[in-house]
Image 1 (spheres, rainbow, N blue to C red):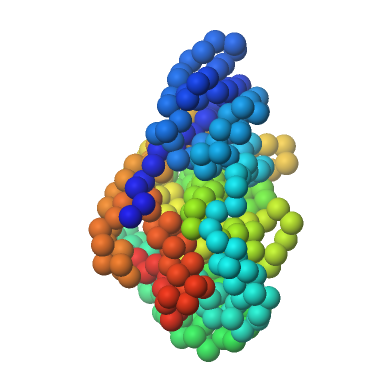
Image 2 (tube, one colour; image 1 turned 120 degrees about the vertical axis):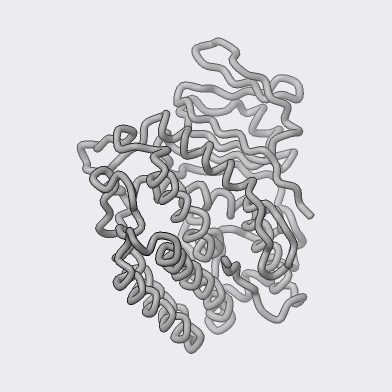
Length: 343
């Protein structure tokens, strides 16, 4: 089984990365600050403006080390990829299925079943663990609606129908999300999901975590030989990793939403770490971003029994396992794609 590798996050905007022998060299203001061996690194995620040397880009591509570029505030810019991995027959099958509405819908159903079921589990956990602190009636009604949505999704034959039910489920889920925020209510009050740009502190935190998860999904799909830009639920659009966005649907409640709530409720992040731009968008400062990345990495190390494989694995391997299961389904080794159901 794949081992969970190290991810190097470059959070200093002024940092510049280069290659020296078999090491990544991180420089700031012309001073060498850090040397790290390449062979210990699986992915490099850069939140810097200075960039990366062509030599390091080439070394990452040659060694299949993921190299992604984001703005200092988490907006995805681009990714360097090496040779296409996997056999051509797998990708041809992926493209064939993507062009077939019925086959695409069959896979998309699984993605959304996982998303809605895991969203419901987040609400049910809050009712179980914090019954005296949350509005159990509101959460129970939302949970019941999500349960009905699960049944409705099973009857859908077209992706347009699926997206309609997904939209309704997301609206209901986020309508009660503020109930799950138990601390720092003034700084992290949540009314509705806002994306481009995020208009409050919690939305800023969620968007940042979703970006991290998307990058993990892109790496996982590339590793098993699938094209992360050709999806089954999200429509193809230039520059958009549609299949990665498909894959993270079932993982967002477990990976991102719960972590965001934990960071706020445990006061690992505070309102002082967020500022509002003139456009109205909310940005995280450098210290807050580092705190979130540290928590993200620690979360990935936690172990869980995978519901389909029945094996104990680190949380961080879940995107890779799901990508592998999707590839196995497309190759005909599985009768259906098994989504990740959090228990």
